[in-house]
Image (tube, rainbow, N blue to C red):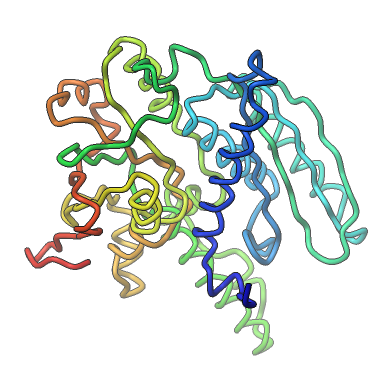
Length: 342
């Protein structure tokens, strides 16, 4: 095998390779653990300077964000979280108060979602703070498609409706605001200006998007509705996935996984007014926020067009943005000016 860098292969392609390896391994040894087939877990890892920036990221909010990321991943497997284990690695010069803030945030997030805080550990680190969190959960029969195929169905069919929950791009809008304020602070520091004028930026107008970036909450309403819908529609063909890396990136991954294509409409993308205001202020394309931003922790799902009555259960929490197409059609966005862009 020739030498390849991660950048050349792509993180998403590597993840899909991991997924294939996991499925193969489960097939080979899973028969020995039939009693535990309903158990699953999700692990997230965040590192300062890569996934967050301690310049503006509160540790309490980081705990909430890590919890939401792991909780959301579990729900994408149709599982209900019940135990939490966490590790924080920190250099010796980090204050004890920061560690206590992390634990406090984790305690609050776990209690809010009725999860048992199973274990917390602290480990040394050479330079940067990093945190890891694992949620363990159970896949309940009433919390998965009951068409005999289990929590991973055969995949969507051509013509199925393509839907997304919540609003897209808000987390990235919050990040853009925070990065701008950090730049202002750094420039003031370099110029030796009066720091008291810049240490406390006015984030009041951006509360919604900043909160979505620093301390996102899990989509509990969708989870509760999903359980109700799947338990009351025994023949419903339903596929869903977590939106972590931006809509376009996730669609590319799912197109390969489900052997299909997608078409969607730019005008149908659910983007909040606050997100649009940030993009306008920074003179940036708000559609790119939704397509490429990531960290929204919302869901994409597909249902047959004949089952549109099911959407009434999700009223107010999802939008139909397009439909499933043939694999050879790829991914197509119909732009707001009625032109199409792949």
